[in-house]
Image 1: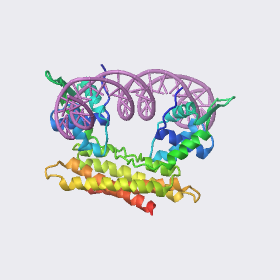
Image 2 (image 1 turned 180 degrees about the vertical axis):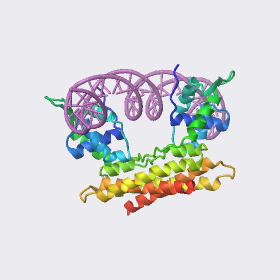
Image 3 (image 1 turned 90 degrees about the vertical axis):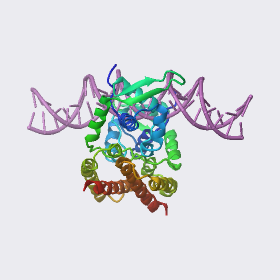
Image 4 (image 1 turned 90 degrees about the horizontal axis):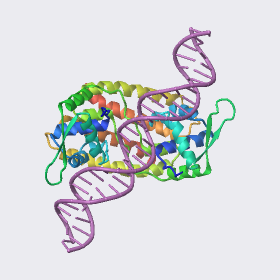
Length: 168
Length: 168
DNA sequence: CCTATCATGTAATCCGTTACATGATTAT
DNA sequence: ATAATCATGTAACGGATTACATGATAGG
């Protein structure tokens, strides 16, 4: 019964549980799909295994419904909150890596125009969606998600600029 | 003895081997550090295990030095070249994910100013290095790496802009 | 000569992905 | 009713990271 190490995935689960109070993995999946998932995607299976791991370390509590579907309900514990707070307070000097498949192909000699065309279309679609989300965003959305969205928009625009230069 | 699937890591190894003719894992490590590594980092152990995997599938050939250190020398095979060409020719609509730790913290409520300060410093350092590299880049560097570097510079600038807005 | 550091490699662990499976709802 | 899709979960596999380990080379 050893302490699991806390990965970014862990903090996503902890953060979401903290925000929402309690949730089943499926609920988490839905929340992810409408928020963090836009810039940090997770497999749905992770949302089943990760809370389990966290429960082993006492960062979340697990409760099983008695009747019906016997779903598992998780909530963050004090220990979990502490870990989350600590992590959040510590600034990172780790930088985002690019890790862009298209860029990798480009690096290894793919035809710029071909790659650019496909990328442009995809990025434009994404940008449009981000902007739609921002439009429809209610006033009371907390600052963090709002800023993350802004970052996404900015990055999208930057990529579009890059690929446009190559597409023509 | 089954065919290994080809991952981005695989293509990096294949691509580098193609470019350089033959190499030991350590040599690969050095090349990575001065090129792809800037935007797609690999653990050095992967550069030992990945060529092995690729050898199992016949994408590279493995040869062991007789005397001395008995190092392993790898070179890309015809099959490897074919795989590489195919991959390169096929455009992706997969988009780069952000996967930025700092952004994740921001999303979950970290203090923007704190995060921004650390990020700014790191990004500025990176940008400076990219620009130095571009300055010193000889004329005959192929287009792919050059473009990848441009992308890196552009992204760095974009991030710096974003974090600057938050730092003040 | 001794000690760092470089060069080279293997082993173990673990997270993440993929695949599989099945009970509930909804639509036709 | 039946098919399709949603909801829920587990199991297996494999790639990636981490840790460990040792021989060579260079610097002091």
